[in-house]
Length: 217
Length: 266
Image (cartoon, rainbow over all chains, first blue to last red; front, side, top):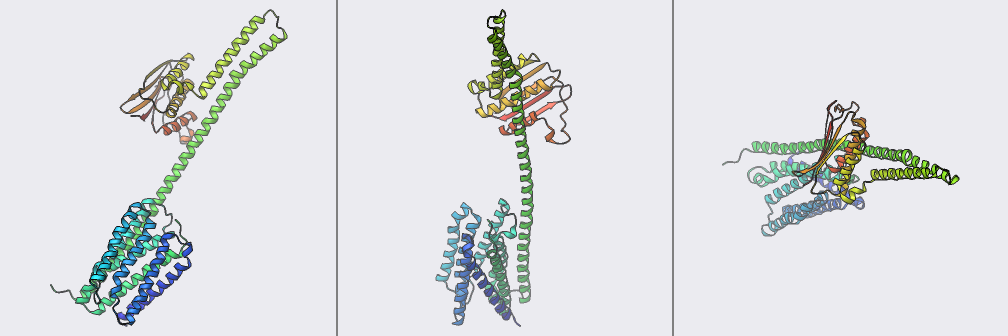
């Protein structure tokens, strides 16, 4: 079994988990607070991107074009989730500028320099940094405000934990993605993207845990 | 520069990712542990605050009950007995209005009633020193010193420098503290010949000091904690806390007692 087998297998697993989390989110949508409803939106956005990627793949097109759109939508929706979780006037004031700039940047990279064979390293690295920032701000709030008696009962703790693990792992993979393509075998890239898919599974499990529990604010 | 061999690069990258994940896991572990520790500290602090509040509430209720008991005793022992005596004299006068000693009885009834009026005034003043609201803290304290002098128990000095008055609520608290301290001196400072009350405003602070040369007491804390403190002292403690002031008390057996209340008052 070579690396492509594992990549396909973990990719399928992540899509199944994403679908399950999306259905769970729909089932619990009415009971969820507004912030976690954005999380459901994020999961369904991810599913839409997966469907588009599948269609492009079936038509023998490159789905690398979707990566910046996925990153922009994902980070924007996450910023909405965290605006609710952080409940900070400063963050709410800066959020549209900070994350809006990222969405514009991602949009420009797609519109002005569309890539079909290479990764948009800048977009992916910035997305990882943005995710780390969001998770870091949430953990900072946890320690500053001490409003959550049991962290395992806080949905955003699971979202942030998943996000931090995913973003830190993805950061290095994204940073060296094009370098690997240019200098090393495809096998190595496939191994790294398999690890990335496993990190996505961890992230979706975090989302699923957050949507599964009864939220306590 | 040539790219490193694929095995080397792959190992380095995998190691880097593993290290990043370990760092993330360690960070989350740190947040969980540290947050739990902070939560426990906060709970302990809240528990201590609740106990303190309970202690204050108990002190306030106890002080209220003691005050009611004292007022009841004053009314019963002084006012009621005076009025009962006056009634008895008036009854005698009504049954024998032309008796030979009627003028003396009338004068006695008048005197007893006058004394009852004076007692009612004293009780009323103790309940609320209206002088404080009318003319301020210094005259009220001066009057308190004068009442103390009238007991003939000890010589009283009163000295005040108080150019910038506090709000009435704070003045009332200070007055009550002073009243309690004077009462303590009269009640407990056996052998005291001199009492000095000072109210000084200087360097952004207002200091009330009450000093006697009585028998004093050992200031070591009671073995069973603050609950064993006298109710008067607890009542002073509550008012000091309400004022956001500092309380210092120096005393030793045979060396008198000096109590100082200092509050910021620019």
